[in-house]
Image 1 (tube, helix red, strand yellow):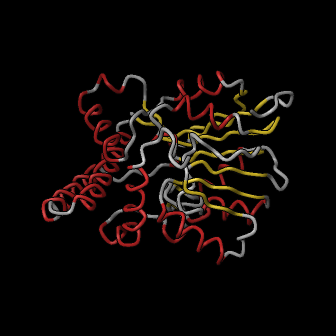
Image 2 (cartoon, helix red, strand yellow):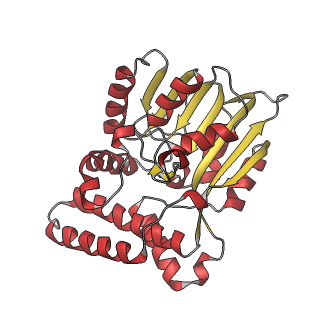
Length: 293
């Protein structure tokens, strides 16, 4: 069952987005094509404060307990960059799931070039119907935002953990009172529409989902200080570029949807500027006495 409850149009969205990352940087947008990632770049002290896509991997490994050749599931693996880096740094075996055929194809090529074909596998399927496993570590980086039911998705993933296994969630999590500010609420709606986020869980909601699965929270890190949103002036300029491009490309629904996603990304940056969004890492552990389902 390849897609389960997650909208298959999300796969088409990432097909287009992964193609656009090759050229988007020329228009002032980010893009982790060189590192095979699609997650947020964070301020990196090792790069003189320049945001890098690999900084999140450093923070993840700082936060997780020591792992020895783990079996890992990347739920929403994109082009496989996180799995490749973790495999090179800590060893282990990796399975990644993505809804995008293009991302899987790009990722498999990168895995082969890294000499990891025997240890890293990319599948086109939903994390609501994850591989059997079981897994010592499951990571969900900026992927549960696409779930129509984040709690249901967390439950499906938690069932695939080994006793003592870890589930790490990294995502954008809105402030609970965001709806009280009309401008922030509009930006949140633009972000959710552009990034195909039907439900965006708060920190409290994610913590509640983990608790309901019988997982013990062992880390809750606020990574927001490492996020580097552009200035409001720069955001406004890029929104103008976006509008102009969308006006020219009205005949092409596919690329208009990609431009809509970048409009949502700019709205997200404004939410960070206003303090309405947090970038959080939650790590929870299954009891060693509990078997995976």
